[in-house]
Length: 473
Ligand code: ADP
Image (cartoon, rainbow, N blue to C red):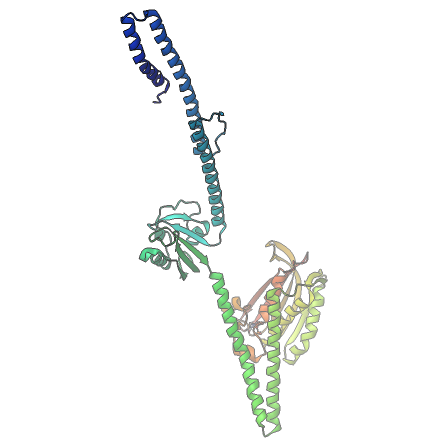
């Protein structure tokens, strides 16, 4: 119960006047003062005392109300009202100091809240998974990326749960154990290949939140480097494949040139060796041409130069260029002319390259007596850019060749991937033809399909959308 100060002040006034009243009564008893004036004086003193006391009590209550308002404002983290009377006594000065202190506390709390919100927004939008653990390894904070990495519920409250229980991969658990071991006052990092909840390569670091304090809270940061790792592996594979591809013709060139330099006895051998040198040089040149094309495509160096072209015109151009070669190899090259095909907006040179690469393969891998058919017709299919069905043109190259075992088909567009490496080399292949085709088709937002039956033949179809020009990559 709140006790008012008024009655206490009134009681204090009465008590303070008691000695005066007693003296007065003594003087009245000895007839030194008449009783009435004495009683009137004491009564007036008591009345004035009580009146002044009540005034002071009211002033105190107002102060108490103001202090209450300040406390209330602080607890609501709002700035208190600065309405103070212009009094200059000690308590008013103390009130002013309290107001100033309240101002700075509220301002600091606001700034801290803003910082916390910014910090939480940064954590939410971070690509890295971040988990803060307490001294007993319990989760204090976990961001969205960490929930995704460890396949946790997006909204569940994991605070207080043991972090080791939440991440089920033994390598991560082991890392958390090491981070907390030996007092855990040092930052540690590791690169881990985890399997649970899904195979991933991660780079993880852990550091104490408070520098140099053993057994304190720790922050764990997990960086998913799966893509980086696979592109590193792809790069390493590419370099190793390329070295291999370059070494074979170079070794032949070097060997035959050296033998010729030493001198050979008969003209026939000399001619044969020079023929090999010429073939290997051409192979090297082809390989370099293909590498340059592929690297330009991959780096997006040369944008598409699109124009409206007649599909039949494109087929005929490719046919004319390859018919003679097909004839030399005993393969019949046919062209199927579908009438009234709408013009298509493509990069002429790029599409020509696609058709030549496909025809080159079809002729290469079709034995004598077989045939290769070049065709174009309209078809609706899924647009590679928008993902919606769209009208387009299908270019297809069908051969009656050796075919491709089904297991190899998904990998044919990888750089240097061949079904039979030695055979492709003997036939002058670089292993880059279909990789180039795939890139060009993707740049046109089209799709590539390879269907084949061993010893029956292969159909390669390229679908390109009709309609607006594809965006420049
Ligand atoms: P390459 O220069 O070796 O022909 P590509 O990238 O053009 O390289 O083709 C990759 C591999 O796909 C070839 O080595 C071959 O094994 C196979 N291939 C491509 N087209 C055909 C086809 N029409 N018939 C049989 N095999 C094919």
